[in-house]
Length: 83
Image 1 (cartoon, rainbow, N blue to C red):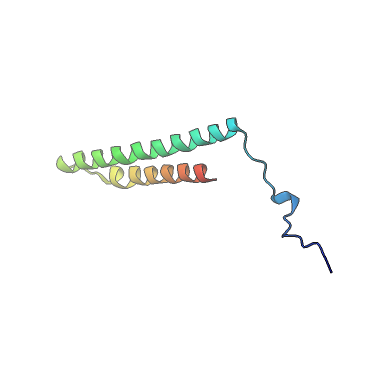
Image 2: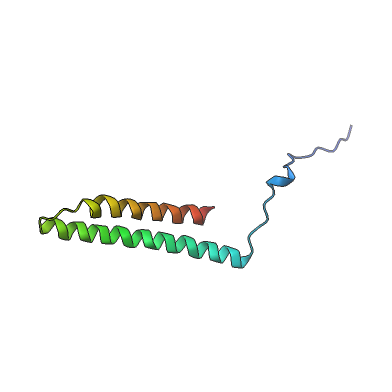
């Protein structure tokens, strides 16, 4: 009546090898660089939109284009960091 009860078994393909310290550092650096580029794009987009609007110029690219690129780079950095 004493049976060995085993926990759930994962297939061998499911086991991931942990990243080495060097690989993890490189991955974190890429994520931080991507998020930094996104933040710089967002800040410069704000400044450019503000300046162009006060000079009655078209600020469509700064408002929509640069903001979209900034958000994409920030999310890319978050995905790389959390992966």
